[in-house]
Length: 128
Image (tube, rainbow, N blue to C red; front, side, top):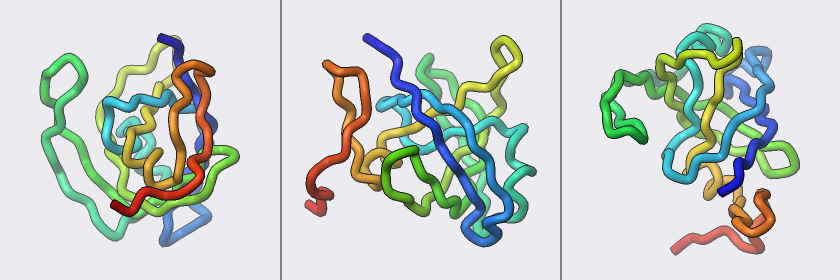
């Protein structure tokens, strides 16, 4: 299976001067946009912050802070306002690898083209 990476712009919905632009890996097994805890202070104060235990792909649990709202835009797709998960991450070769989860994709009207290894806009949002 191929890797799909997208350029993401994330802004604090309450203070749009607090912005970060980065590449993130599409992970349909993840739920939220997952960012490194080291970036949390870059976004300033959040309307909501909740501490939660989350389960990673290898089945072990870690502490996370679910914060929001952030305005998220994947390049070429519509903006959404949503919560994000901040977790402790270890940089690889000096860089973090944020994850784009399926709720971000669904809210932004994005589908994963598994054959073309790319993101595509869905024709209609699913309200079922």
